[in-house]
Length: 81
Image 1 (tube, rainbow, N blue to C red):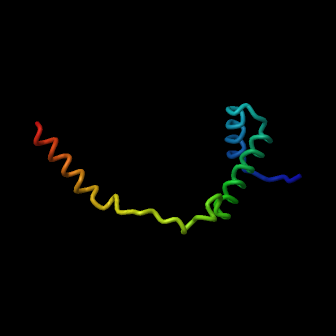
Image 2: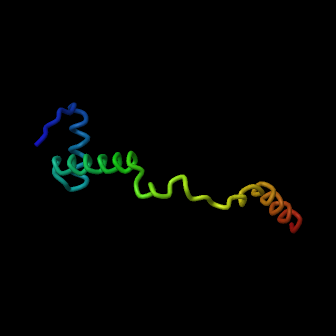
Image 3: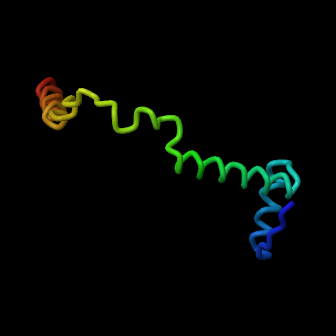
């Protein structure tokens, strides 16, 4: 079992947030700590994409002419008016 010290303002915010969620303060803090630990570990470990990160290559090239293609569409729309 661990204990922690929090300042009075944070405690008030935590109590309000726990009430909104319908949880006890302890349960709210446990869930928040678990979520933060999971997020931190997922980011630091690379998550589910370790086996493909940096390996998969897309064909690319599709976005090279988007500006020109958009300009063409605008010009077509103006010509129809």
